[in-house]
Length: 397
Image 1: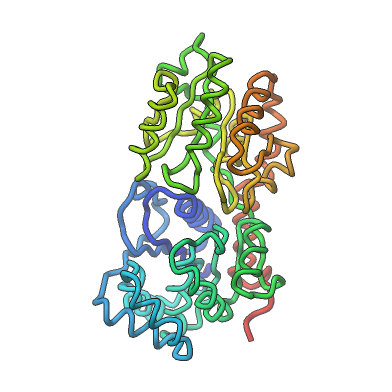
Image 2: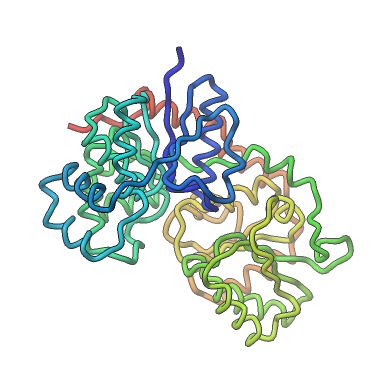
């Protein structure tokens, strides 16, 4: 009988890691494995996208004290760093669900569990230590650890102490792997790079034309940005660069995504005098249609893990411009061979790159061919090799 595998997420809200977790869970199930999707909070925009072949396992919350006691039990020697960390922060949702995760491992005993994201990774390793289950734990890091703003003095130590117990450590890019090794002191040879997958439905859904009036035939070209409205994405730099392009070219900008920086970004749009050429529709069900019908997609981030939206834009044949930020964008674009790269925060360089991209006729088939190198089948096979042990780095001592 095929092995039971588990994929663990913090929630089913919008996010690159959540999307990849769902894709992998579905791919594992399609290969005949029994798959559990273990989530701390069973809510979010992705809830209705859980594959029907995948069993959804919500983790019930326990008391704050019980969860934190288990954190100490998982690493008794780590109390000098864990105690001040616990006293200084509100307990994460996964901390209060640690008892339920321990119970899941003890009763269901999956052969392997893939956790996605730093908090899920720490919870999975703690639960494994407390439960003493034989489940292989594979952790996946999706962002540079050095860019964690809160409690950055503590997290590298916590990560180093717990990640040594992982059966395998996966980073979504060499940049993330290098950063994790340097920041947490984990031997680089213990970290395997597996790039994030392109959505298998991207090209099919890209055939539809967006209902947005700016994408009707005969309209001026549209630049597109996709991502949460948060500081990481550095949309102020994008808006300032766009204002310069707009002053010389008839072009528009659409930003898809939602987040707590919306109001400040809307104020900046008004101050720059580009309110007639910028729209932020929020979350849309089919961003691929927007990608396929945009003149270019722009990623202005200060840092990224891999930049999944770049892969998806390439899959849709959409030209891209990206910052050469820490993480994986340069790897996706092969150091600029498949899209222009500019320095982080450089308004002039970003404006110039957007203007040059608008003036060129893109080779969309070449872009799609590059995206095929990130196909879900290939990526799922790599993860299965790690989960089953056939493709994993050396097991922890």
